[in-house]
Structure formats: C-alpha cells, structure tokens
Amino acid sequence: MQDKSQDKRGRGFAANLYSLRTNAHLTQKQVAKKLSVNRTTYTKYETGVTEPGIVTICRMASIFGVDVNTLLEGSFETQASDNEIRSELSKSEEEQLIEIFRSLSPAFQKRFISMGLMLEKECREQELKRTENK
Image (tube, rainbow, N blue to C red; front, side, top):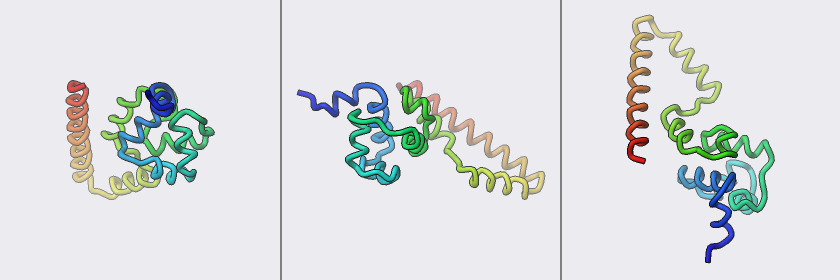
C-alpha cells in the first residue's frame, strides 16, 4: 500500500517540487529554511496537501534554478540541466563580471571571450552526452 505522499508525488507541482529537491540533494528542512517556512509547511507543499503563494513559488523557482512555469508545469529536467551549464548569476555578480571584462586590455578581452566560448562548447557537449544517455 502506497502512502498518500508517494501518491501525490506522482503528478503536478508537488511531484516537481519533490524531484527538484531530491535532485538538488537537499532535505525538506534545508529547503524550508531557505524559504523561511517551517518543515511541516514545506512538507505540505511537497505532498500536495496545500499550495504555496506566488511569492513562495518564486522563491522556490530561484532556489532550484528553474523558471516559475517549469516549476508549476513540469519538464524541469531540461531546465535543470541547462542551469547546471549556465549558473544563475545575481545582478551584482553579472555587473561585477562586466566590470572585470571592461577593465581588461583588448588582448585580454579577446582571451576572456575565447575562454568563455570554449567553456560554453564543453558544457554543451556534456549536455549532449547526458541527453544521449537518457
């Protein structure tokens, strides 16, 4: 006999939430802390007993590195792997990266771009291998 939480995980938002959390190797308690809710409340979200508000859903999407539609509608596997390739930068980190680039000489800017392109190519190749292995 399956328990209710396992049954709820089989579909929809609660299933996505459970899968994203376990794929991120996080406990319910860790996610609850990041969301500033107690573990019991988070467990209710993950088992489909209750649904969080939009602010909490946005926080969840940010924690797991997916967009809100992906969190709500599913098919996060592609999104999650894309986020492994392109880590999410905060606005200040992105601005810092731009400042560093601008401070470089033109020769180093070209090397910086070249290194970025090589890294992007390597990441895409890894993603292709992951896709082929599914």
